[in-house]
Image 1 (cartoon, rainbow, N blue to C red):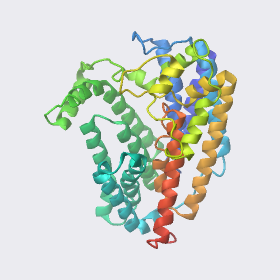
Image 2 (image 1 turned 45 degrees about the vertical axis):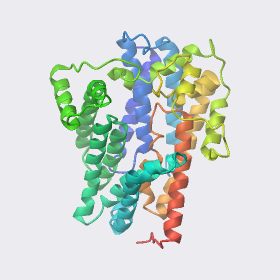
Image 3 (image 1 turned 90 degrees about the vertical axis):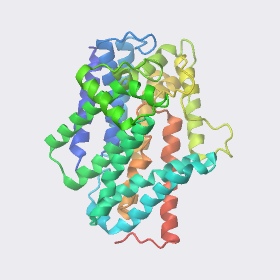
Image 4 (image 1 turned 60 degrees about the vertical axis):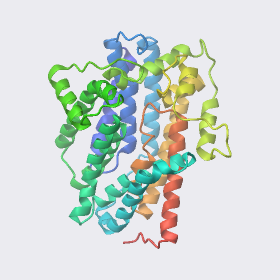
Length: 423
């Protein structure tokens, strides 16, 4: 391995240590974001360089030296910027057991989420983002009810996890299940304070499940998305068991169904950007950054040229590659930083982005200290932020607008429903 690769591994290990250390003591969402990024931007590429795939498209387009000499310093600056911004004020010492006094509010929030889950498809598509935020209120409510003294209400927390798994199996889409399960575990750890060895064991099991899931996902989707008429849960379990025994599931290899390390390795896309720009495409000098900022603060009717989520246009522009119709692949924040500002500018941008996220975190901490219920909404606000593959327009749009929706919700229930947050 190259020198920068070793530095990258050490940095990711340090971030993992910070993440595990914070579990049970705080809400390490920023640490989780940095850990996921490190795994996808650094660890995945190192595995790929050590054992290259033979896929015609999903490979590292530049040498390890070229890739790591940009990505590792940029990632290191990103981490330092986040940690230094939140170093003392980013922690909170709240007794979350007070959430038991808000069980009735938690139940209302949960039912709002359920209502929009059931009725959201009947609402205009222009309200899609608002519906998405509100239907996820059911998980926010489940977190609040986890602290309830009523055992029946407390079970909603565990039922929500089961619901997530069943929905994931029915749709053959597992991203939300994995993300919300990690968020739920953070609150579980805050309540029950598991020992470090228990936390490590839990994550070893979780990683093993996630890797096994990656091996069966292609075969499972192939059947489910082709109108499988049998029991999907039984099919899923059978494929998982088969994978454990034979390591073979006979799934297709296409743009959206690819190997385990390619899913982990966001680096192949970043390397394609480094290879493509400026050789075939000039640096964009902040144009997509500007578009993302405008998209996050202006509604579509005021910004008809608003950048769209999905990754199709930016992927082709930045990498010079094409992807199948209907397939979404993000270029990642760090890939977008390089494509706009080149090596040095990209590193500086990652530092600015880390500082911005740290300031947002400090702002949310102040809200939590005034109203403890805000803490249950933090996972929803950061739902897109922690994804290492997502581009800025998606991340910033979700972050800003979800905070606005949550703050308007609290304003409404306080003014109109007379909710009190001083229990």
